[in-house]
Every structure is written in structure tokens, then in C-alpha cells.
Length: 110
Image (cartoon, rainbow, N blue to C red; front, side, top):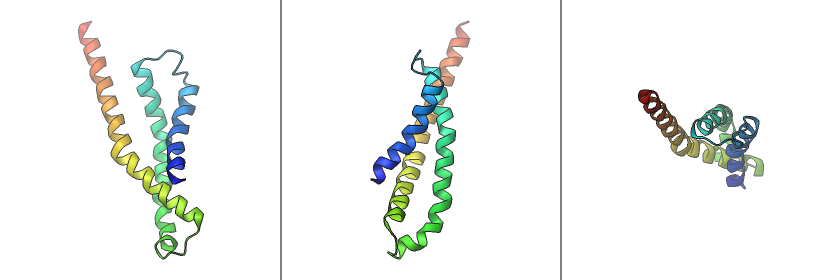
């Protein structure tokens, strides 16, 4: 259940912004990167909520006095923060660098 919640927390902001920005009407690389960058703002805020609330919940979680909500929150938070920090952020950084290089090459040809 925590994996599904984590996937949804990454996918919903991205899908919502892609629909709002009409990314799929005309698919091009800079527009996709812009959509991912806009979704990243919301996803970072979600990550901050997890990072702030997890230490508060950790007292009951670590002493085995937790309920199913606490277990779901802590597991989802760990998954979200690890995936975000070690997979999602580096991928977004690489996409932005490649988009920047592509724009420089395009401007250099002019």
C-alpha cells in the first residue's frame, strides 16, 4: 500500500500539471522538461511535509506503538524521500542540463 501511495504522490502532480499545461497536445522536449520542473515544486513541498512530520511520528513508530496510519505514513515517507533524492532529482537535473545544451546548440547554429 505504501508503494502505491508513493507512486500516486509522484504521479498526480505530474499528471495534473501536464493536463493543465496541455503538454500532450504538442509533445516536444522543452515542454516536457518545463512540465516536470513545475511538478517538481509540488513534489518538493510533499517531501518537506514528510520530512517535517516523520520525526514527530517516529516516537510511536520506533517503539512499536504505531497504528496502520503511522506505518503507512512512515513507509510512504521513506520511499518518497529516497526515490525523490536518489532517482527523481538526479533525473530532473540531467533533463535540465540536456535541455540547456540543446538550446545552446540551437542558438549557436543561428
